[in-house]
Length: 91
Image (tube, rainbow, N blue to C red; front, side, top):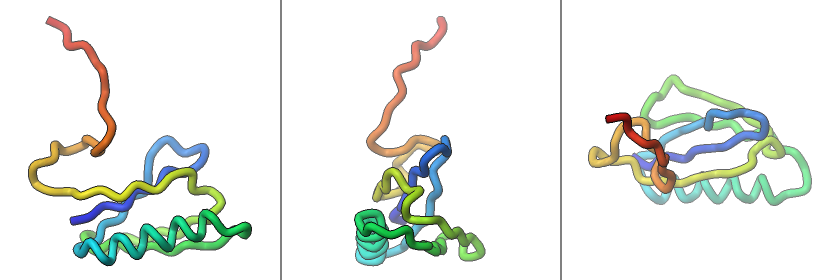
């Protein structure tokens, strides 16, 4: 599964949708980036291929970042690829 995560302005949690194929994920990523680059606000409607009942609509001018990442069985649950946390463990 390929995950497309959207970081929204003034919202601490990202919006995520998944695609089964890399080409589909790349196409969606490009559509979102192009909408962000355009000078006008556009409504972007997204669906998820992993959870087919999941639908979300967001205005393009509210997106501050889009992240395309591979989700596989080797990745730890709850950890976003490309980011890490520096937390000291108590002993």
